[in-house]
Length: 212
Image (cartoon, rainbow, N blue to C red):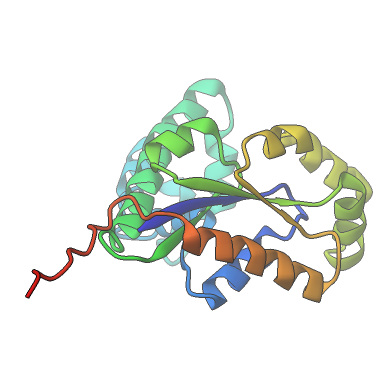
């Protein structure tokens, strides 16, 4: 198994790249999806969040209402710390379980992590990191044109994320998504070919049959 981190700033097209990698045979573990799953009824973070923040965070169906949770949890540093202490370990464990489902195989597992940091590399034992790269100007144009976001909102979100230079500094592979769909497909093919050529650390070597 080869474990690869995938990241990129808002508007870079990371989700599209993830889909293209899956189409080529990758197994995807999506941090955003996992974050939604761990707060579902019966999931690891569900009851601890209710115990800490009360039943007021629930909607009419008994599910955690994320805006209500945010309203309560982001009132101060102590409550934010409590929220993180409940949710982050649950997300981490679930992501590791998703990854370990492919242990001992020749599969490539892509861990889609929007805010990938150095500790993720160690915690998830990433073998490589892919950064989807687009200039801030192009991302601004795409987000305002295609997603209908305001320029003020886009710039605020960009300011809250790592800079382009910080992203690229931690990259083993860079996918340029500044062109059209065909260009992106070629970029993904280039990186996918390189990933296939990498050694899979936990894959036992095939022993040669005995002579004779």
